[in-house]
Image (cartoon, protein in one colour):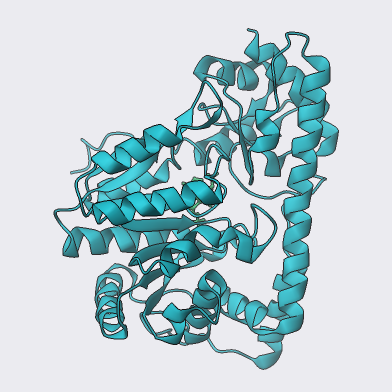
Length: 400
Ligand code: PLP
Ligand code: TYF
């Protein structure tokens, strides 16, 4: 019966970690997956997470099923963190929030909703984008196309191309936007550019669909990183927002996130939420409780909340330090006169180096630097001590 099943290709990002594990070279570096490491390149469990878990044990929390929409205290906390507790959309109960299986599961639920209730609409995604976006919309049966985003000439944003492509899309399309710290490029629109993007979406009757996987990780400030989403909500768009706590709370394998739909009225929000639950129920019945309780405890306790912000600043700060060190090493070592300052302009966990496929392969094959073939490196997996070695590898591969 299963004789004809073909071998599926490995995930282009998660597959890199498998190759890294198999490598025996001492200099090896895993800059593939976006997962935070300490300066010793070890995984990191946040202190606030440990404290919240201790609190949960002490309280003797049970393991009963959650409602389909998830933990109420989490859903409240997550929408408030995203939009601000005093936001009009929250005050007037216009936000439908459903706990999701982290960012990916939340995106998938929204995609299922689009497939069912907006079957004639397509989604526009940036070129390039996080690889999983295409898989998610493909599997949900939602048609998508790309809008221009990255300009290799400037190693910056192709803003005119982006605007032109969004304008050219059929009215009523969903425009997938990275809330902050665009993956893989690390290039975000400026506040003025966000305003212009909102103007065009309004003009065309498009719906913004935000993917927020790095709130707090781009600038180090939760509020600043929510600027883009809040701008659209302020302008009274109906908005989809998928959230993830994988990075900012380091809860990768707890699979905790949410889908929020900001609607035009509380009545609409109630109906939208009921349909999101209807889609979720036959897929996984109800979401896991552990990560939801951690988030609710951290966000709900003023002491833990401020400690979290300090830890997040520290993580974001460490990444900024290696970014600067890598830039310094590249600038000092490279005698070709190439301008490496684009690395400093990029933000978040990643740097998009501009290395092409064969150059990226040289990084791995010759230098044992494991990374995706699109030239993206995760600075979260880099230490100050390894910047010098990495700079040698990049310079060699560039001029190869
Ligand atoms: N969206 C983007 C752009 C990402 O980079 C990620 C990875 O963190 C996700 C969504 C979702 O990841 P997760 O499913 O672990 O929350
Ligand atoms: O882009 C990244 O590295 C992170 C982690 O299927 C990730 O977003 C990568 C691939 C994947 C799920 C998460």
